[in-house]
Image (cartoon, helix red, strand yellow):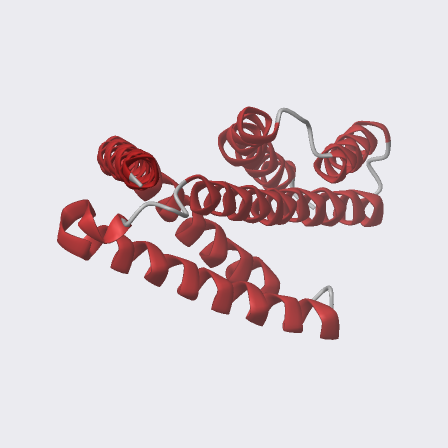
Amino acid sequence: MLRDEIERRRAAIYRDYLEIVCPYIVQLEVMDSEYPIEVFNEIRAITTHLARLETDLDDSSVEYNLNGAESHIKRAILDCYKYLCVSYREKYDTFSSLYKNVDLSFVDNGDFLVKLLSYNKDISKLVREVKVVELANSKDARLYDLYEKAFQLSDEMGSFIDDSLEKCNLIKMRTQRRVTKDRVIAVVGLIIGIVGVLITLIGR
């Protein structure tokens, strides 16, 4: 194999690591406060193959190690997609739990809730599809594209939630004030009722 071809393919591996894998790892660490071990194992495998390129220059070994490194870098990216999809699912679930008693239809005249539910529906459909494919064949070439689409949609949903938090919190505060006001009115009404009953009993 020509040295230029080796260098081109090796540079592409390093570029994918620096420009794709590293930022995703940082994103995962920020969201989950942990480093995914599966991604770490893929990086270790990549490093092993690249190191062997320097020590074994036999054409068959060079091709084998380049193919191996390229396969593992793609798998590392795929694992990042998978973990980030899980992280965004947890983000959605946490958001839903925090705002379960808030009428989010008041946010952007209902547009926020409609779009959020649409995101969730589309992501769930994609994830179900990718799970079926993965269950049938974990090496299916379609997995990469499916997970990438699921990640991109999940990332959009995460940004959409973040961008709307201020409006959601405003509605939440209004809801809490209304609930507090209703409770005060109910308590006052109860007290007045009790006092009324006592006055009636005393009057007898």
